[in-house]
Length: 354
Figure 1 (cartoon, rainbow, N blue to C red):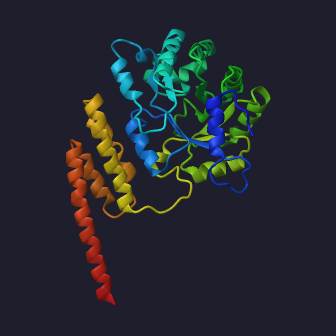
Figure 2: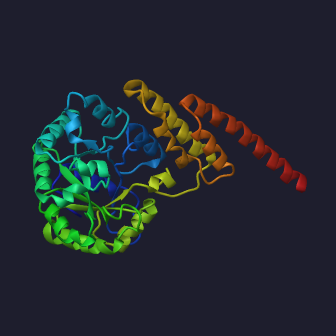
Figure 3: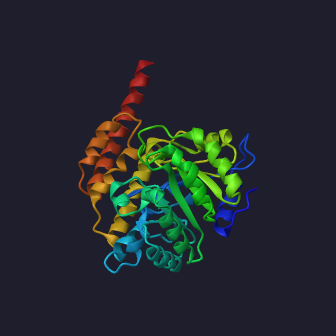
């Protein structure tokens, strides 16, 4: 069993071993949901948890400077809000100034966060222009500074990154550099910034990443991100690449809100739409505390729940035209009535055919 230089991450590893044993695996990897802009807020994390969540959650990535900035604190508080009934996530922050990470990490600790992750992999042009995300790959000194500054809080500091900025082989120098920073966890999205998500993830480099970790930092956990759709696919990935400790799922959750469940099963339409209703309810409560929120951003979630059934396209199009949660609920109620009537009609037709 891996011994981690962090009580927090050691506990994550140990808790993962309580999941059912998997043939072909001596150690069960931990699973996490990737930090995604305007997606992994407190509302959606709780919906995923209800569907059968991961071992670890991450917040939306937040500008380190904004966390204590007088004019930006309220917005940052909304992004970093954690409800009383949810599992404490890892706070993911970005930037390029040491002082921002020093003050932000201390503030996060005061607010109950137990671990911090530094975003060195976001490909967004806006974040790169501000020296964060993937831009760190081109500035080793800045990367070392922000890691060291964040550590002053005493919290475990991990890093999420990509293989390179423009060239894939950059990882042969970049990854060793990060591994030498004495971090408990390194998450690698196995693509370059230039590739975005337009090409298949480079799983062919995973074994080399494991080798580098084993040689340079055997106590650092290695987590892989990119193109993993669900827990079953993640377990198979680890089976093919021994030495990987964790699997992060991002876009896969948009195809299946039950992506993290231990035993995959078919879910009824009623179960799926109940998750959407749950999100609408939680959204209203969140909006009351931190609003007004932009309802258009909520619409991106509709496709997660409204798919793979008759009339899904029609319902999805109609939902995209709604302007608030009240209209969305009314539309769902109307659909329920029509769906029930349709099922009854089909049953009668089947009986008559006999």
